[in-house]
Amino acid sequence: MKTPPTVTALAERVSDTVRSVDVMWRAGLIPFPRLDEGLRSIRAVHRFGPFAGANLTAARRDPTAVGLVDELGPVTFHQLEIQSNALARAWSKRGLRQGSVVAALCRDHRWLVLAMLATGKLGARLLLMNTGFAQPQLADVAERENVAALVHDEEFTELLSTVSPGVERYLAWVEPDTDRDEGRTTPTMSELVSGTDGTAVSAPTKPGGFVLLTSGTTGTPKGAPRPQTSVFDSAQFLDRVPLRVGEATFMAAPLFHGTGLSQFILSFALGCTVVVRRKFDPEETLRAIAENRCSALVVVPTMLQRIVDLDPEVPKKYDTSSLRIVFAAGSALSPDLGNRTQQMFGDVLYNLYGSTEVAVATVATPQDWKQAPGTVGRVPVGCRVALYDEHNESITRSHVTGRVYVGSGLSFEGYTDGRQKDMIDGLLASGDVGHFDSDGLLFIDGRDDEMIVSGGENVYPIEVENLLVERDDVLEAAVLGVSDDDFGQRLNAYVVCSADADLDEETLREYVKENLARYKVPKRVVFLPELPRNATGKLLRNQLE
Image 1: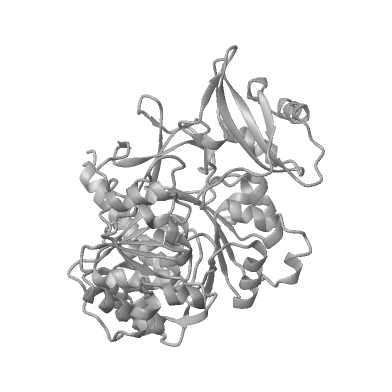
Image 2 (image 1 turned 90 degrees about the vertical axis):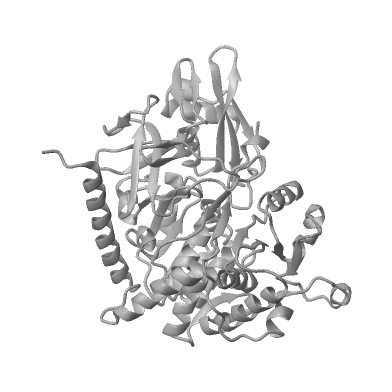
């Protein structure tokens, strides 16, 4: 007799929960035999949300442990707890309450972290703004999301001129400047914290959650809310990435980005010290890893590119032997960049595939990468990935490209403006196309909307991009489809060369012709000093067209 689908689904959920508990126990999130501590941690997250709940647990575990290191120095979990209590009380006195939307336009530092903790304690909703937004985007998002208060670094003040004057403003990071101090009227978070009682606050009746904004390169970004997350969802990362309790993480990826935020939450939950800097610098990153003995580095691929492109003598100045994990996510990681990373740091590369909407899909471990450079790996516990053809039929054969659909406990339930993403069988469309190899490793072949048809053949630009960056004299490459009278569509390549390169257009066209099919040879090759990217490293393709 065939098993009913509901019974099968229940069995899968039970199996995932058992596996999740095992993963969390191995990572140290469920301490044995003190299971009561694990239950208190789960309760804290349920009451205060993932930010404040994780910090409260870490402060209870070891009040003297350093939770954060920024340019101002170290601060303990206990100090963060007291200061965020004070901030929550100060905001409450100024009218912010459960359900209020608090936007943050900040680089990575303690005041952003305190805002994250305080909104959880109020039950307010935190909206994380991209520091690369233009003025119209900021105003549109603030109005659409009904922002009540805006926390911002002083450097972004002029950008906010079009935001409604009814939105309360609070300064986060303030540059020391006596003349500017005298004329300042906006209250600083430092003033609020120092002038308010820091004793414990009562839990809200419901955590406020947070909203991530999609990192689209055109138009107004969409909001992807995370109203509540389960502690067990942490296993989706820990199943494939061996983060452990009490270590240190250098967070190069910005906290407003899904990559940085997810790993920040997880690091705090594990009681790890999180090291941040307001602006990314490749050598400073290596220095901070060495000084803080970081075991994990969280980056987007463009940051990783800048690190491996350093003069070979620079990395030799810093002892980075403490690194066990280089966690990369946010955009495609080319085989060449991944291989160079492994050569520099050893077998430590973990390549995550996901998005703001679907969160986690797959993770490639160092062993997966060595076996198949370029792979995004396998599905972790609690996640599902399936491929579908143009008729929405499931693809089960290996090496057959299809549209990628993902499901996980961290997937969102719809944009804040009410729009939904395409779904099949309860799985969300990622917007990408890919294939599984015969060993079950997933490869992303490109964006679904970037495929072109050239002379009747399907062509994905990423294949040509990866080939070009394999050359030592090519630092970066972007390939786009363009109209063509003879073939319908052709490719244009945009290339950034190394300083000592001696390249011309015909040399690169001939190189592609020697390695790929003729219809994949670029129609034009354009040389640029750099590729246009947004704050998270995503290529601004509309600026290349």
